[in-house]
Length: 70
Figure (tube, rainbow, N blue to C red):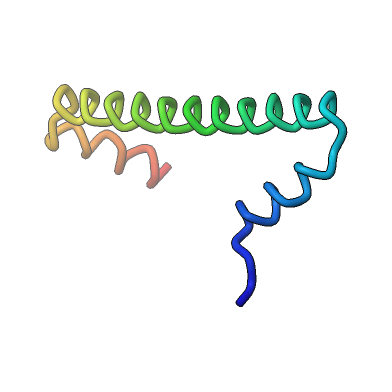
């Protein structure tokens, strides 16, 4: 049976000296924070798009078509 990626990371991290284990932990924390930022940015983009759709009537779409035809 093969090990999961998390198990492989754990096994390899156990062999590192303590200062490098701390550095690895900080890197994992950084990756988690970056993931949170990306999710938050995606949520804000979705909200922004939804708000724009509320204020942008379908009748205004003819102006978009005019721009495409030029």
